[in-house]
Length: 385
Image (cartoon, rainbow, N blue to C red; front, side):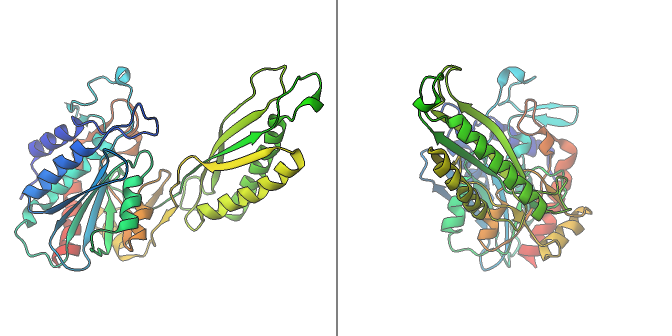
């Protein structure tokens, strides 16, 4: 069955028209239930067995849609949420799909609601075929904020299914992605004692202790960059960015409290928890010598670095289907959670990350039909034969 452009546009228009922003800021955060129910209806009408799995967070849910049964098989996965938006900066309504110059504009069009109609189009020729291994479609919640949807799947499994391969349809311009860095967002709070600035003995300056903390973090960054390198990335070493700092309330008062937020991007093979332990170890002596209370915490749980063996079956298959060598990207995805479920995992989808997270987000129409053909190749390879 040929790809039907009008059906694709109609389905994506409905998804875009269903707001599903996820954000750590409560005023922005929305439910994704409408999107999940819409997808469940479409996949159910196509013969999939659908399960809506509600998360602990109110108004949040994942979808598992399964066609066929048995062991092995293929997972096609995507997230149902979007980032917040600035409506005044858009040339059109973010929630109304708009076509112009061969592009479909709308919030989430490329990142990544546009992937689900691609799956629906890809599976149409096989709805009455005999599936030797199942095709499982996952739609997750809150990828753009906490990744709680993917965390729940990694913890609870896929309802007894044990697929062998997973493709996450993040926008990669149809280039297979077999590795990305992890992400950690951390906070350090130093508590000292306020006092009149004319007499340092009256207080304990948290800013001065934080200066030692920052020096130690910069030293750690240098050590990490000396010891870890991967030529497969544009930025070949791990990074540590001192993002923002807040402390004190006046030049004539000894600073009682100071807080620093920073992020780290680790390479595949590195461990988030090990780096956290190293940071904690470096903070303890500073707290003791400065007489301050130093609290280290995570702003969110973080995402592990992702790496799939470039010689794995799935990577080679996707390279063959796309005609592209597998590469790396700087952004994080749900791939590590799919790997926790025991699957070979790869990131591959239409659209560009360069259009995501900004006004006038779009997905190019000329990538849709090639994406459908790639997914059909994967379905035939991992579900039908």
